[in-house]
Image (cartoon, rainbow, N blue to C red; front, top):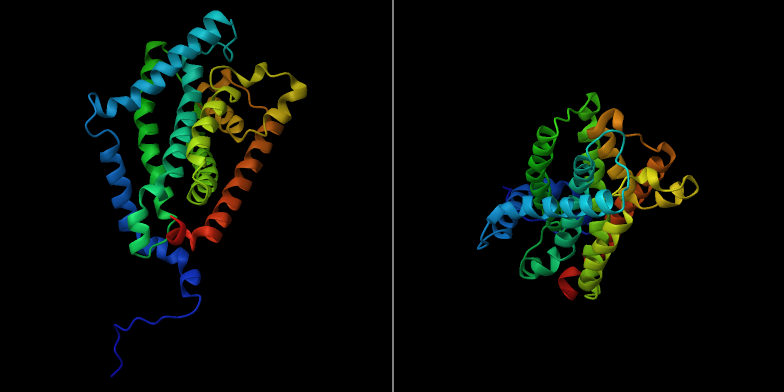
Length: 276
């Protein structure tokens, strides 16, 4: 009688069954995500309130600098703090995802060197952990809307679509940085610079409508421009207008990063255990 518990080693089996393995190892994905959520704010004085404090204080600074000092306009009649925080939500999610994902494989070196599982689970769980902060930060936006008596329109129902785009941007660029950081540890210094520089060249503290028309398409090569404009379009309603050609360009860039990020990660994944 054949033994049904035999393990058959077949050439190329890992590659052929990789995407099925992602589902088979879903419990590991849940475990890593939950572990990261618990560890992130462990032994901190205010705990998970950091997920509220950081974006709130950044919003206050940007409102003072760009609205009060630089006298930059809001979008329509939308309160400036609401406009800023509508951009802070996707930006903070994106920035946290890059920071966490880029170091995720190095931080789990012992796990990677001992057992097989799809390595894509590790950076993906980091993005999910950052999404928890995103959801918590949404409470600030809700509070600001109540404070300013700002009621969003019907466009708010399209917000999940733009959240998916933010996920795609975070995963695509995050996978590139994750794989590169394993091979070139210099990226642990480069990633914070990318995040800091990106904050100032993205329309977080100001409306992208102030960018001259002749530069709008070039400016939209920054994938977060389309993501942020989409969030504002959904949240601010009629107060916000979206520059469609620029939005399409940003979405194409996001798609390119996601596809090439997955391909590059898969190409280099087999070497992670050796070089980590």
